[in-house]
Length: 285
Image (cartoon, rainbow, N blue to C red; front, side, top):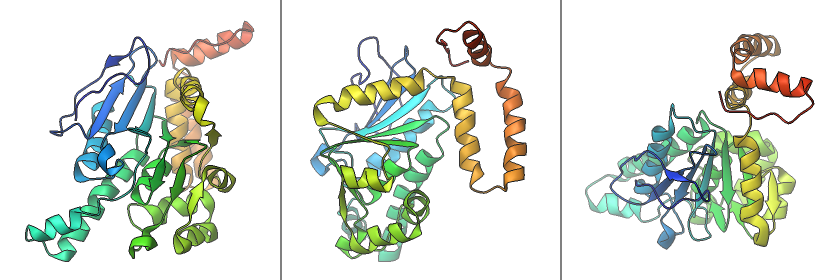
């Protein structure tokens, strides 16, 4: 993977290289705002999750780990988010001597690793969805913390369309967002949802008009990136862990985490700006 042209405007600079031997995924980092943009860059296949793309996403996230990034945006190139799994990979692996079982497990584990790594990213993540996000590509979108969708975009979990069961984390992620019965309906019917329907079901947070999409996404991302970084990352971790905790253990966990956040410069700035009746200027420290 190589750094691409800046997707964050003037003043953006290239970030760390995470070499996958291709340009299948681009990583751009804006040092001024702290926004990192991961772009799936296989437009000939509508950014399908080929091995290079799946590995590139993981490598990009690894390159950001421990950095001073404040928000990560995941998007696709040339007006498409991701068309899902690589339908040609199975035949290619089998022609190379792999058994069917070996090929299936390898491909699903690779795309699943990519989705899991994104879901576990330490930074707040935003999916910028244009065009189509289907199958495993839809899972990449919903593995992010927030989903922003163009009004002309579509999203679906149509594994049935190619005679397959769900994979790449669908059974874990989808019911947690839309509920068990709606998740089953979407999987059983393979419905390709328009933006309004996706918003209605809670699959996406906001839908923006095509002509203002980039501008509205940038404004939303800036609001996250300009926030108290340590506090937001801690809140993300607490919210993710809350699924597996009782109320009492969640409260205890919050108390322990909050004591560390109290020590940050952003907390001091937050208190001082509140007392001074002005807007805070968080530095991410």
